[in-house]
Image (cartoon, rainbow, N blue to C red):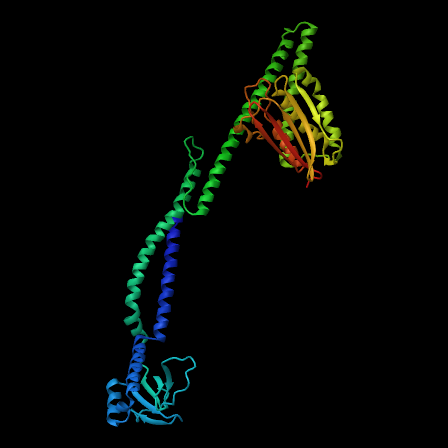
Length: 453
C-alpha cells in the first residue's frame, strides 16, 4: 500500500493539509482562551453602562438608591474617584476594594485590575465633566477550556475542516495525477523500448517533469542514432572487409591451384593480395586511432610549428591528383602566421583528409582552396571547394562515426575520416564546423588556439 508515486504524493498532500488545519485550530483555540466570547460581551456591556452614566451623571450618581439599583440591574460595579484618586462612590462597598485606575499606556478602552483579595476585574474608565473619574467594573468570567472548545471552536472547526479536507483531498488527488501520470508514461516508454511503433512521449505536467520527458525523448533519439550508426558501421566494415578478403582468397586460390601458372600472373596475384591486405590494415589502424583519440590516450607530439610551412607541403602532395582531375587546387596563406603549439603530423592528417574529400566531390573545372588567417587568439583555417555540396539534413551527422553522405559511391570508405578529423581538432583545443549548399560547394572551417588548454 502507498508504494506508487501517485499514492505517496496524495498521502503527502493529505498530511500537509491535516497539519495546516490543526495549526489553524490551535491558533483559534489559543485566541479564544485569551479572549473568549463572554469576556468580549462583558467588555461591551461595561462600555455601554459607562456611556449611559457619562451622558447623565446626575441621574445615576447623585441618588444613592438609583445608583445602586442601576448597578445591580446591569450586574456591574460602579465606582467614582476624585482627581486625587480617592474613592467617592462604590455600588458594591462590601466587595474588596479596587484601586484607582492608572493611565492606560496602550490607550485601551477596557483593562484588568486586581482587588484586595487578588480577584481579576475587567473595567473601563472615563473622566466626567466635573473632573471625577468614572469606573465601571465586573469580575472577569471564568470559562472552562473544555467549554470554550465545545461551545465556540468544535463545531465550526469540524464543519469547516471537514469541507476543506474533502476539497483538498480531491485537489491533492488531481495534483498527484498531474505529476505522476507523465512520469508513468516515461516509465512505460522506457519499459517498451525498443519498439518499432514507439513514439516520443508528449511533455505534460509540471515544468520539471516536462524537462525530464524532453530529456528522455532526446536520450531515446541519441540511442536510436547510435544504434543506427553501429548498424551502419557493421555494414560498412563488412563491405570493406568482404571486398579485399574476396580478392585475397581468390588470388591465393589461383596460386594454389596453379591457375596463375605464369610468373606474370603470379606476380599480379601477389600484388593484389598485398594491396588488399594493406587496405585492411589501414582500416584497422583507423579504428584503433579513433578509439585512442576518443579515449584521450592518443600520443600527441606537441611542439612549436609553422603552419605556413605545413600547409603548402600538404597541398603539394595532391597536385598530381588535382591536375589529373582538372581541378584548380590553390593555397592562400599570408606571409607571416603566428606559431602554433600542435602535433604537425596530426594536423597534416586533418588537412590531407579534408583536401582528399574535396577533390573527390568536386567535378572537373572546379576549384579547391586551402586558406589560413589569424583570428583573435588563434588561427582560422578553411578548406573550400566548388563541388556538389552536402544536403542540410546530412550536415548534423557529418562528423559521426561511420556516417557517409553518399553510400552509393564506388570509392566510399568506412566513414571514419571526418570523425578522426574532429577528434584531432578537439584534442588541440580547437573547433571544426562546416557549411554547405547543394550545387555550390562546401567549406570546412577549423579554429585552433595558439596554445591548447
